Image (cartoon, rainbow, N blue to C red; front, side, top):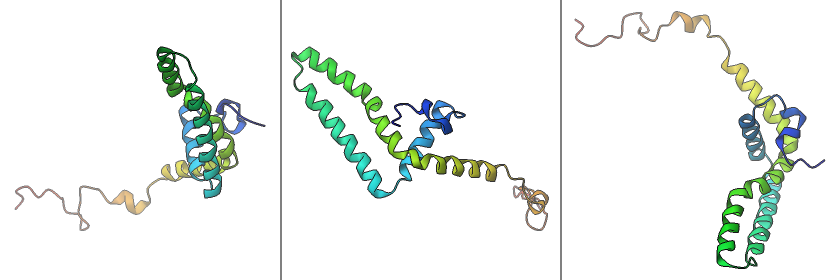
Length: 132
């Protein structure tokens, strides 16, 4: 199945739009080199076709308007390519993010709790300003 939006992917449903974009971009970065090269080549072909078609727009004003529209809307054209080629790696990225969150929530060890950031290793205060 071809996806045109990240909203339609079941594993991305619990995430916000910004998180979905982050997950997709990270999954795209984790693609193997060959797959990433195919993605870049497909995007390049789409952009060349888009801007080649703009050459044949009559009138200078319509060309400027169409160039602005193409410049603003080209991410909508390229996102499905990234989304569909990164799809097999999205599950791995979600698991990696969950592992990072679990690691970040870990409680400090008892040794870390006893050590105050304001004391030296011998327990003395770190106040160096004018102490005698």
